Length: 171
Image 1: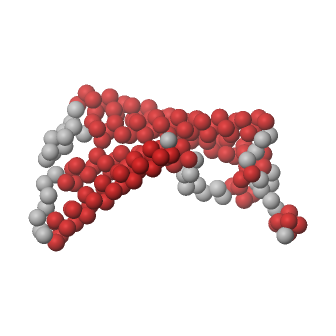
Image 2: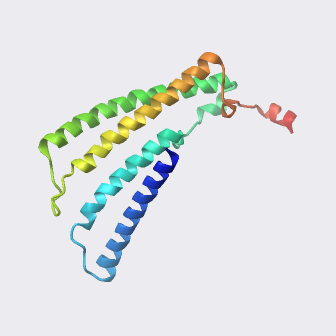
């Protein structure tokens, strides 16, 4: 899975970067805009965003502002906070997934096309529901891990929090 996601993300980012490069060169240096290039870049760009978000969910490497952890004293408190945060993420994510499903049904029903190249925009729109469903699967897996940790008391090393006096004793 790591290899697949790495190749997918690398391929998508290279495709988007190449497209932007061609756009800048042709439009601003050669002063010859390429018809439909911006439109066609929408597809790999949206899939890149959603694949990146899915990868961050899979690796549990989202950017977080864990300010509350500063005030927590025990690994159990940190684990309970992580459980609450993951549960909230799952609830909000499921709500957004429900909206994305409504949007996907609308996209299928209307079957819009891009204005210049007449490419169905459904292939962009479906990236949203696909990404959100996969993110919710990985969020549910992380929530299960947090529930297990809190229930068994088996906390990961990163959940241990040492006070300044404990750090001085270790030094």
